[in-house]
Image 1: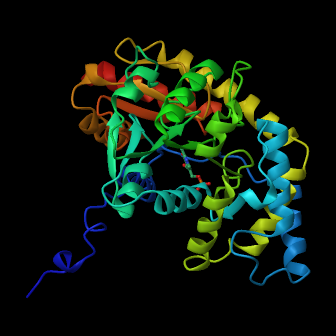
Image 2: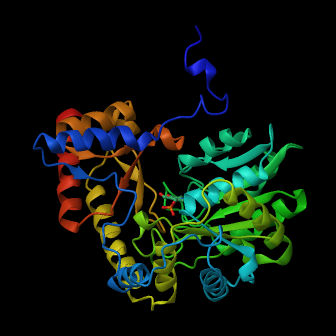
Amino acid sequence: MQTLSLRLNKRIKDLLGSSTLAITARAKELQSQGHDVVNFGAGEPDFDTPQTIKTAAIKAIEKGFTKYTPSIGINELRETIALKFKKDNNLNYKASQVAVSCGAKHSIFNIIQVLVDDGEEVLIPVPYWVSYPEMVKVAGGISKFIPTSVQSQFKITPKQLAQNISSQTKLLILSSPSNPTGMLYSKSELEAIAEVCVKNNIFVLSDEIYEKLVYDNAQFTSIASLGSEICDLTITVNGVSKAYSMTGWRIGYCGASQEIIGFVNKFQDHSTSNPTSISQMAALAALREPEDSVIAMRKEFEKRRNLMMAALDQIPQISYVKPDGAFYIFCDFSKLGDVTEVSKRILDEAKVAIISGEGFGAKNFVRLSFATSEERIQEGIKRIKAWIQKNG
Ligand SMILES: Cc1ncc(COP(=O)(O)O)c(C=O)c1O
């Protein structure tokens, strides 16, 4: 008799589980046994969703806005997103060039399925967000990883990009500010990358989900704003999860050419249909409300980032590249031995949950999230320091 795995779809059977899951599960287990675990594993803001957004959702329920909507979102929301793209990013997408999905993850998944054909190559800079390569597998595509280093601040160069392009290359995925490194590509760096993509007719998926979380007055640039040719090749992905602390509401969106959006529409018609009607009304309120809550959250994250860096600076065995954005510090732990093993031991013995870089394609590193209070940051780094002094 055939085993179940032999009878699975060949694209699905090789999918990797989420690498953050094992640590998160173990952290929860320890907590349920009564241990006080410091969580540096979080991939979401620890703030509450602002009240005006919640109120908009409650009103939507009360008014009976609880039925199907068009698959890629209500017109009002698509129009508001088009205005947001214009105001924040200098992008001229019309509402008809916008698709709303169930989180930015869903937007990215849809775009990859719509664009990437069997055997086509997708360029992914390393370290990468864990889901990109798995989504490429589902499409039957091939991930081609472009290595980066601490010296290049975890960013690819135009030269490297050009060297990795083949006749099979379809798409480049850029995450800026990046999960897991927090690195932000500058306007001039993006111009150089755009030039290579236009010359070689490569699509760009620009994952801008951490756009609002940039520090030290750094300037965020959308690659699609750098000219009409690169705009035609770019799919700009964003969402409300990180900026408005709305991870559970599941609203993401993308802007792209009318043709691509047309296929995202068909794909969504036959899979999820619309993102939740109530969440769409909440997202509408989020995008229309003044940016006060976003600014307050950004300030708080910047303070926490500085605090975590200052604490890490007291540990000579650990180094990192200062993140420009997002809420992660990607730390080199290689002086401590096998980093995946060390991460497990730090959780079990010091009760601090940290994410090994293995799942991000960087096994010498760990990702520390500062989406937790200042007091917990101090406590967690103190425990890591003590663990290293004992074992390092
Ligand atoms: C780089 C990156 N892109 C996309 C997402 C997905 O966000 P959403 O919650 O909108 O699906 C995440 C969430 O962790 C992320 O880190």
